[in-house]
Length: 598
Image (cartoon, rainbow, N blue to C red; front, top):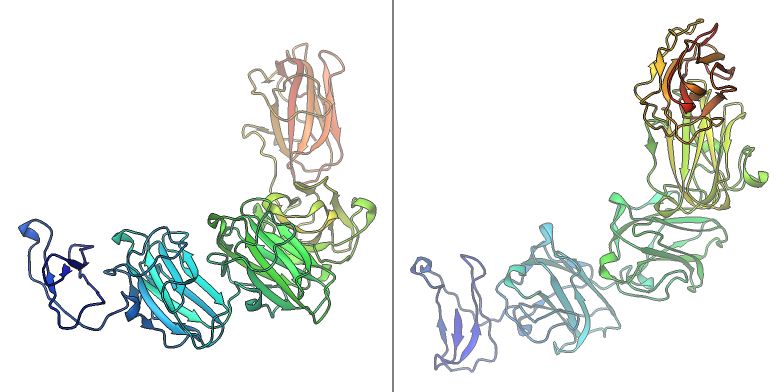
């Protein structure tokens, strides 16, 4: 369809299909009253496309032109219905926004009267809110050509936001909405406007009223469409870029705030966070370690009753913008032994990355005997009921796993007797505490602390064996003075093994494996070679528990003969493994002698 002057040659407007049965629209202004104008309607070449149509003409201009802009009735938290507007069939009018990649292409117009000095305008698309793709938006003075603010897409179905302060109350302002060139990107959209500042600005900061272990809904906040405001954190690599603001009134001298961005908690990458007092004096600052770091800032020196502000930002570049979850607490729930977090899953369970923290914890309970300096600084507590005689606890830090440094772990029984302790670790990484001999059904407590830097950490617990032994280990079922047939076993052809006894010698190890279930605390194992007992030269033997920890070790005193290994530190009911190797020549061997395994 085209619109022409009376000569039928001078074109005024033009519209073409976007789909097989497109409705099309031409809007024109500046016509001369009394003049004749002509409309021509056609279709794509091919008689198969020819057909009937309906024609409508209205002298009232719609929102395809600035002069027909839709009047927004209220800017006090007003929103259109979902997908109420569309750029389909629209034409270009006036100027493109300075941040738009191209245009104007198919822009639509809206207008409002300022009732405050603030306007926050949101374009929404995607899902039920619209089909518009790669959108543009701009805010203009009354002339429609003097730009006040501009926004452009960061993804196919980007929501856009423009926030402007300093408007003149009573003045009329215009909003234009467009999309990237190509009618395939045209579509429907929703529009919202409010006359109050959003959390894009410090003055519109979201108030956090619950500081008792509060967390927002997952991924509810976002730096997408945010603009820079106020100062950047001293530890940030750049900015401000797209910072969002929150505030709270201190009810205690302590605060821990976490920005969470992993998995369902958000899409924000390379995050920044800072804590400020009301005068924007920095209290604390954190920056990302990896692209999707969870961050924590904390303080123990707040003034009760004073207001504090939190700003969240990300590294420059729209690709890093995204959603995030916020958590805040004035007291760590498991700061004391009485409120220890209960652990119930021991099947290789691990917490979320950087889930726990001791940043604002206080000293409580017993001090681990291995803790650095013997000082219990900021320990936090967990407890569990033993389902097996052994348990493995790991505390991991560094990268996405947490900011704590030099972590240390201790475990206590119900009578406050220490049953295990390890640490402190040098720096960050994984610290592992393995405790054997637990009483099934009894409750045990885990204390986690640091010897250097308090902060977040990840926790894992498992009550299964942590070392996977060869599946072909020969099971010894008769432990009552049992002896093998002479020279029945051999390590010839055994593959290279990563396990070797601490007392062994040789360049490579080709272990032959056995296992047994202890019935007493004692064992006597003999390995014999030579004189019909076997061809192995310089035999050596080691005993291992189900966590891969060596219990005992023995080796040759001569090229051949009998090597004896003994231990009285076994736990009845637990599995143990025996590895047999040579330090010189692989070959056959026997397990003879009274009490070879008892």
